[in-house]
Length: 279
Image: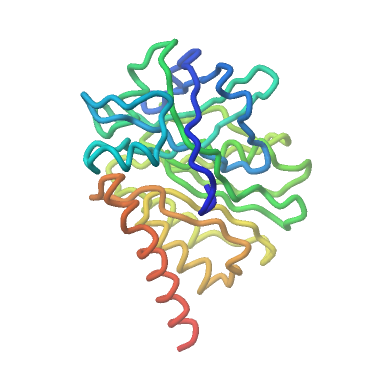
């Protein structure tokens, strides 16, 4: 979501849920609260779901400025960003996919247990990336957290697009039906006992690039994203404007902790790479 954008809280209702794989749950949201929802320009559109801490009730309708003025910080809503897997304006249905690892985290366990009819509050949508239809080829890289955006990008690819997509997941049971209109499917990398992102870094750094005219999307755990950012910018010479890259999460950090340091972390990585380039 762009800086300075109105922070109007949207509302939707859970219409149905579906377990896609052992670690992925799909929620379809609907309702008249989505009448003004606008998405479709980007394949990485996202919303920020808002969760009130247990035992805290806000006046309706939710007003974030009022909440932050009247409640202590510890009682402010917690935010979790999720990619818009699909948006159907004709039927007012917004589809979101959630990575679920048992009771870990906030939104994942909620998505696993939520029932149709529950009210959901959110901010957004934001977004910035869609596949360039005239790019020579496309590189899509991510772990489970980036799978919804990668899937949306693959489905948006123009006819004849050359696509190399690498998705790291726990194992075979987590593979989903994802393809471009031409039938290109992701290369699924099964993590097993390896560290998160190790297989992705290996796959990208050892592949032969078809050409230098690449449009790349690389998202997921911040550690491997940093490694691939350096590789793509410094060793492959991919221009910054041809690269959508960000750490959605970071090992060892809570979501709140990561969001608090993410901007400075990204700036330090960029500064480090600019220094190396100038050396």
